[in-house]
Image 1: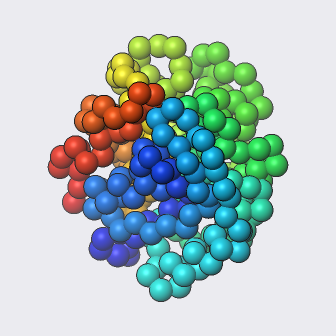
Image 2 (image 1 turned 90 degrees about the vertical axis):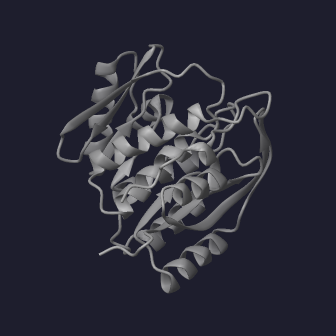
Length: 268
């Protein structure tokens, strides 16, 4: 039985501008009625125009943050985002292997602005984490890299998601936002091969900074509440779309979402 409010541990990097990373995660979990805890992996200096500086934290410090939260407060679900190094990915896997709670892994490789956030060694270290994960949430470029596939259609997307899930024994939520169509399709492929599609009209806007972080954190919060994976996914997508619609219009690049403007976000 989960706690009330449900406890969500976020393992991710900090975004100084508040649009993505730990900051977006905390806003999402809070708006959805969860209790957010954090293990910060990296500090970045960024805004809507890009990442201007970054410093990865010591892996032992990341591990200590995780240990401190789990040992005292406890945890009902985990969201993983930017890791910053292969060593951090490995030590995070060490610490989370025995938790027994749902883990949502957003395999962050490139920021919305185009800045690279994971080198080849870090991406290679994702393999072990995905084996511990309930669901991994790649966008199309990330899915192509992780599955070793070229994606030119929804059929390619489904095949790559099935390949990735079968390889690691996890569900895959393949996000279609990078596709060219006005109709966006996200595909949830569970570990047993069941496919659920979520299709929505694209919202034309430049304010999409932090959408991946927000969706993964919303999904983790839903799972922490005991939602099924398909229901938590549907709720998470709805939350992201509402936050995009409520974007405050800040910045001159890829602007942040309006988490604060999503009303009646908490589901009982």
